[in-house]
Length: 245
Image (cartoon, rainbow, N blue to C red; front, side):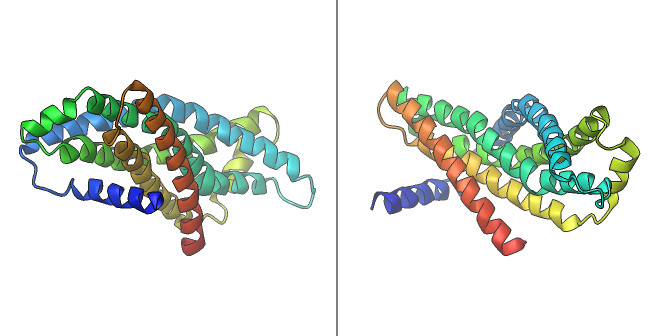
């Protein structure tokens, strides 16, 4: 029963955002602030993870493909498809679930415990629309852009590792990138990026907004939000792969 109660409470919280904003300029300013916080705040970790992710993928692919029959371009193709289909959208978003999700849950939880949310409601402000909606919209704007950046850096990391390690020459790697390229893979990755962006922002917002207690409960809510987000990301990854691919 608790599972269905949580789902119902989550849907009610999301439904509360769909009202007319009191002052569109204030909400626009908050949206831009959240976009910068979410996007720019996670830019560094995404860049580092993506480059090494592509490099490791290239090295491990070369280690497994030992047959002299297979052309060297095959390594580039596998690195490209692996980064685009799985590593960039899924692995990066799982990391972002920990970085962004804990931040959102902790921020809203602190506002709830310190009665800042209650004060805003007394002033007649729809706190769900003002506090949660900009975070979700900001994530939907910036996280797909981070995923696209991760794709580019991941492929570049694989190319760099292949060149420095003497695995595949740069010109051979570039030829492999263009062979049998399917644009559908990019659209599939973007579909996952938007789905995961909603999970990363909406789930921690729900847990942080509905915190009851003190500092200990804020920590528990942040942990629960991150764990739940990661599980939902993996579940959504399977569902999208099953139906789209």
